[in-house]
Length: 365
Image (cartoon, rainbow, N blue to C red):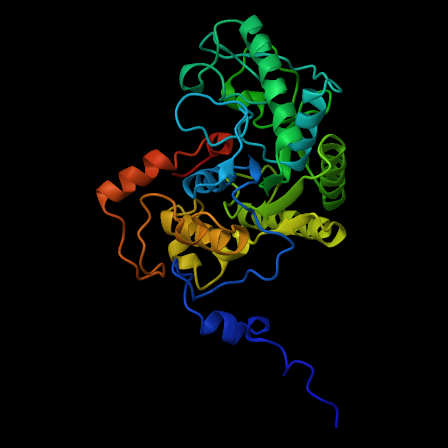
């Protein structure tokens, strides 16, 4: 009689054992933990750069809060969650473009946008310039700021030892010369400097090829760098496809997840961390989202960061690191809600800059 092939497998291979009987992710160990073997860990000596969608800002703040070296080559006002002042990078194409632009290999047609306020912004980081991110007084000031920004971006790519990239979206808007924008100009009411933008939904092959080119280009200037890819658990704010936003969100996240897996399978220097799976797992999901069922709650952020610190960080204060103002005990759906003071402290620390929120101007609340 043939042997049952599944019987010798460990508990993590089985839904009932690893999810039904696990309980929600816990900060102190135990509970739901889908993280398997990883090709490397981050040490206190590593210089860790981070970029990506809105959720990447949590990873950046967590690293700094855990006492690790979060690399910042360009610092703005206040508590900046970016390694350089590039803002959110929602798609793999945007990351690829940032590399090419920083090294002078691409010069986009859209150079400066003028807003209804009369201020000027950079089309590729529209909330990063001026007081409160509202823009600068002249087009020349935007151009001058760009040169210093590109120098900081080059320094980031050339000196980081670990680069963390959070994949966020497949849907994008492209300018007339094919450059992916973080937000279509019409959303900001741009009055000058914007070319006609067109909608594009990146497919798996496009995303994978962009990531391949990003890895090759960064390794050219920094042969020792290692990569961590993750997928944002934050759902789409809106879809431009002719279908329900839930269908678009499911397809988008599946496509991004597969692109990240293709990179992990091909390169020993690439690690995948399951942020998306941690938040959306049934055992965590009830308490992992805010009332809008899209934004990740403080509990959800803490769940991801507890496992990130447990598995990805070695030495330093990794074992105890938890984002500030997070409740430390149980993180299941029955956990006590944050007090007003805890919520205010969390919101102040975890203020997220997100152009995608500007897309959600359709019907309904």
